[in-house]
Image 1 (cartoon, rainbow, N blue to C red):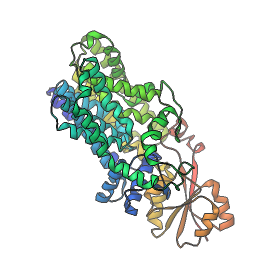
Image 2 (spheres, one colour):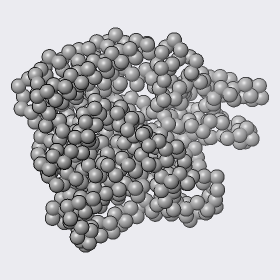
Image 3 (tube, rainbow, N blue to C red):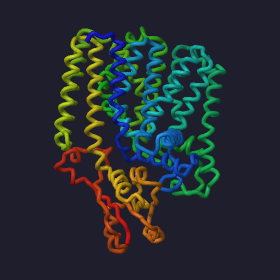
Image 4 (cartoon, helix red, strand yellow):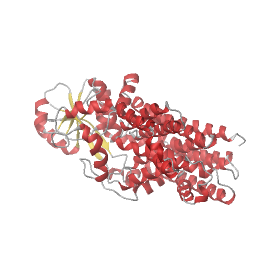
Length: 546
């Protein structure tokens, strides 16, 4: 294919973005995505952007900005899945733009474009278009802060204000720890290049002061909801400080595993998480990291490169040492991974380039075979069309990008992601989401009983039902609570199978509709296989009391 390299990369970036658009029109996935969407929905319905409520009760876990962004989109476009997903998608593109800008400034335009392409086409970024959480926002805000602080380091003082604004936004998404990937790389870079006097410069202390000024809205909301009301019961106790949780428990408490939210750490967790999350680039990335350990491979790079990989290294180490680990945390440093990979790929030539073209070709064929098997075993309505699309895209990538060239390696790898995204958004997730019973039940209820007063009985995780149902569903945690409300006109209850017998026998409940449920973010071979799927399904019901 005779295209200018940079033009080819721009076309591929646009193609990856384009095939990601259909995912915006799919359903919202449980648990986290649906939880965050229901929080933003309640903000709009209650006209209360200060207090965070889940299941009708005060909720303290994440800062507010994720929900403010979604709620703003709801105000503009209505309370829909599309409106919830759109801000995250747009901020993901903004993150890729900042990645391009920084890599272009430190290296060149070609490196910037390759880095942006690698970032946007990595598997976990693609999945995040379906399963929207907070991490895409954090990724963009932290990297935007790094870019603006880099420009400030070069002497452009006004970038201090913009950098601090984005750093504050990142904090208001996740918490204070995000300053580690933002400032960690700079500090180590200054120390290694003997620029330690940078630490004493007024502009950096002004930057920190500005960050704390910009996070005042978050501090105010936490103080108003919790610190002013020590009588509130949070985490099973009273006297909980929202400010203390924000600055300590939600970050260091999770790291040391002594906060109210605990986990189990595994030092190797993010090593194998990166292997799949950064597909189809992960083998190239790991090779690039090994390559960086050789001094001769670093000496020709700009000194500012130190800032890139040390930012990634210390954040990766922090995640690995933490006792609380989730796969999507790795998103935060995928931009740095993309630059490291882009730099290495451009050095490939001769036999090494041939080896990696062979590896990526094998990976492409393997992914097509695996996805084809999933299509057959799951039993998609159009499974053979799905397979045909994958095979055609694979053939196109082999026919269009021939020869021993780096751009062909990049193009074929990117086409793997294009095929994968089409498969996920058009065939896979629409089929899987039928087993998200809360969404299915709420949509059915709105269609058949539009006047119903939606409620949930004895089930804490009905987040998709909460979001898709009309209004704000009422939660019943005991039958005593239900007894006080059972005479409400048009009351319809969403409940698990475990409660059905009692509702029928003691309340004369009429079953309106049953729904199959599976935790779709934890896929297993038995669920993928249509022959064994029924063994894993739980059942939920919409019932009306008489």
